[in-house]
Image 1 (cartoon, rainbow, N blue to C red):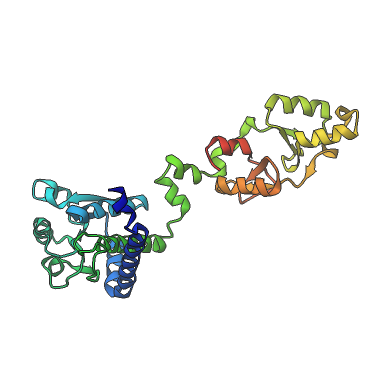
Image 2: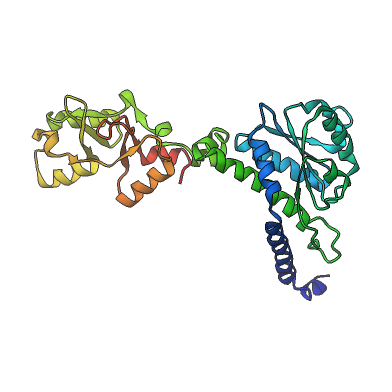
Length: 329
């Protein structure tokens, strides 16, 4: 068994599959036409409805994934399995919904009850099909035609290239709507609060220390008092402000160590004579991972945080420990 396997170049097979599927995607690109614009506009202009994907078999699996993708970018969507449609699931489809049917052949009989139901209720149907004269295509209001291509297996019978094209055209719809709606990373974060992705999209404001957790000190106090405050807060840093709460500078434990090596009586010094002026400050809505990058490049372990209105007013501080403890790297 193992001797025979050695005679087969599996890497060559893999590369051939990739070449054939890549060729299918390139062919799909050439078929994008005004129907795509119509489909996007229909999705964007729907009133309080949902995007419902449906299909069966492997096309159904693609529909489930695309439905999840639409939901993740803020477009209410779910999947209705074509096999279940005639057994009660049709009740999930409402007048203002848009139903997207995925059927490469366009003759998937399990979709016919969905078509009849939607036609009677004037529900918009969008088809992802390969044959314009098929039953599904003729029934749909808009068709996104995917080209007929050879499948990637030797006998061209296993849905591979065709599925990839169906997935790709669905992704095109989702990304097109995102662009129009200016759906950005902060919008995306609302639907992905958990897991690794949610952690990467956390903002500085979510992780920073604020209020009475920030070691603020006045500019004209002696360092013996400042050191007591530093030990109390145990953040390795002090934020120096004037009487109007304007941030003037910052003192780190590293600064104290360096000055102690030069001055035997650091406790009698005034904070404003020790602080580093114009500390590095970041906007509160900055992604925490970006703040970590700034820390690494500037070789500091703490940043002051402000809002867009007033850069000189510190709202809080964010330390490298805050970021790393949030599993952001």
